Image 1 (cartoon, helix red, strand yellow):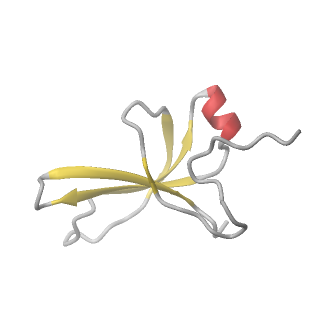
Image 2: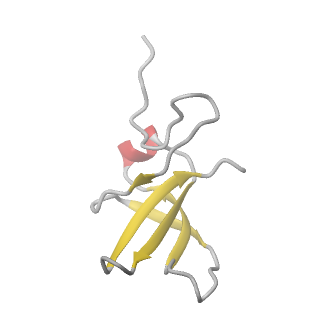
Length: 86
């Protein structure tokens, strides 16, 4: 019996991936910080991997974590996506 992955960025269809919000209590480690132009509403853009044993086992992929500043609501939205160019 094949078990489905609980990875939030697993493809539903081969080659199709979705962006999802990152939980507040997610345990991850930064791998690389990506440079961003100063005039953007993106304060942080980095590559990460989940650090928790089970989370890393279920989703060992390198992920991109992006913080976007929503100036209208004055909140930071954090999203992740699977990096597919490696």
